[in-house]
Length: 123
Length: 349
Image (cartoon, rainbow over all chains, first blue to last red; front, side, top):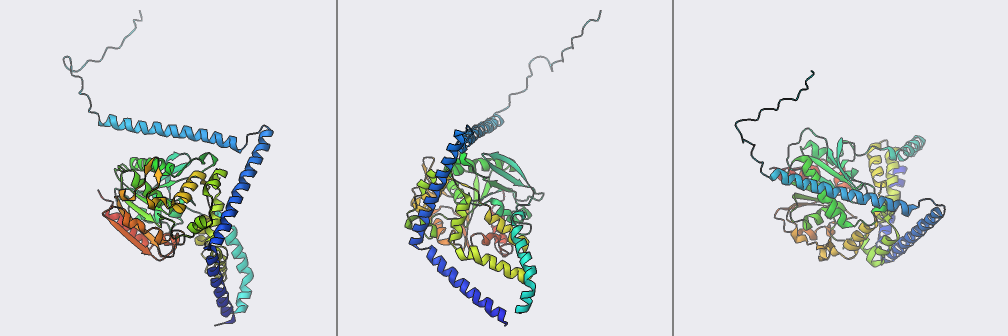
C-alpha cells in the first residue's frame, strides 16, 4: 500500500461521509421547503421574463412566443383532426373487409362480349 | 501505483479527461437501424429492422416523459433493443419527441388515452398481429399500467414494468412536495412547459455528491489508471444530460396526482372522466424493481402486486439503480435473459 493509496482511501471515506450527510439534508422537510420556494420563484421569474420579452416583441410588431405557441397549437389541432380521420378510415376499412362480397353478375347468356371499339369512317 | 508515476501521468490524463468530457455530446446513441412508421404531434413510432423475427407478439417500448427513450438502445453491445431483436422479437418504440409550448395543455390523459392506443394500433397494423406486449420504464411503465387499467378491450397481452412507481410514498420527491408544500399547480400555470434542465436539477439533488462529484472523480481515477471506457461513459452522460421539456399539465397530473395526492393507489385518479382502478389490470404481468433505486424505490412499486387481478404475475427484484439495473454491465448476463425468457413463453400464438 503506497502513500497515494492511503490518500485515495481517505478521500473516498470523506466523500462517502459527505454524500451520506448531503442525502440526509436533501430528504429533510426544511430542504424540501427551500426547494419548493426556489422552484416557485424560478417559475415566476421565468414567466415574468417570457411575458416581458413577449411585450417587447409585440410592441415591435413581431410575433412573440405566445403567438408562435398559438400557431403551433393550431397546427397540432389539425394534426389531431387528421389522426381522427385516419382512425375513421381504419374503421371503414375494417367494415369493408368484413362485408360479404356481392356475387359476380351472371345475368344474360354467358359472359359479356366486349363492346366493339368505335371506329371513324375515314371516308 | 506510486505518487511519482501518478504525477508523471497526470498531464496526459488531464488531456484525456478533458477530451472525454468535451466530446460527450458527440457520443452515438440509439444506433440500431429502425424505421419511423407513424408520427403524431411530435411523437414518432419506430419499428426496428430485423430479419429474425420468431415471436409473433410484438413488443412496444414506452419510456417516460423525462429523458429520452434512447436508453433502451444505449450503444452497440449494451442495448436492450439489440438483445430483444437477437432473441427474435419484433420491437417497436414510441418516442414522445420534444414537447413545445403548444403542448402545454396536454395532460397525462393525452398520453394514456390517445397516444398509447394509437401507438398500439399502428404497432399491430405494422406487425400484422392481434396482440402486443407493452414494456414501460419508469413513468412510461405507469402510463402503460394506466392504459391497461382503463382500456378494457385493449389488445395488450403482456405488461412489463421496469422500475415503475405507482405511488410516491417512499420517495424523497414526496417529502419535497408535501413537506415543502410545493405549489405544483402554480408552477404548471406559470410555465407552459417545465424545462428539462429543471427536472434534471431536481433529480440530481437526490444524490448531490454522487451526481456532481463522485461521477467525475471516478472518471478521473479511471483515466489515470488507463481503464476509462470513453464510449460507455459518454453514452450514459449524453443520455442523462438530454432532458426534453415536460408539458405543464402532464407535470401537474404526474407530480400532483401520483406523488402529492397518491391518487393512483387511493383509486382517485380520473382520466377522461373514468376512474383508474388497478384491479382492472388482467394482463400477464412482469414487474422488475431495483434494490438501490432512489428514483422509484421498490416500496413505491410493490403495492401494485396486491391490487392487480392478473393471474400470471412475476416479480424480479435485482441489485442495481433506477437506470443501471437495465443498462448496467451485469444486465446482459443477468436480467435480460430472464426478461427474454419470460417474454418468449408468453409471445406465441
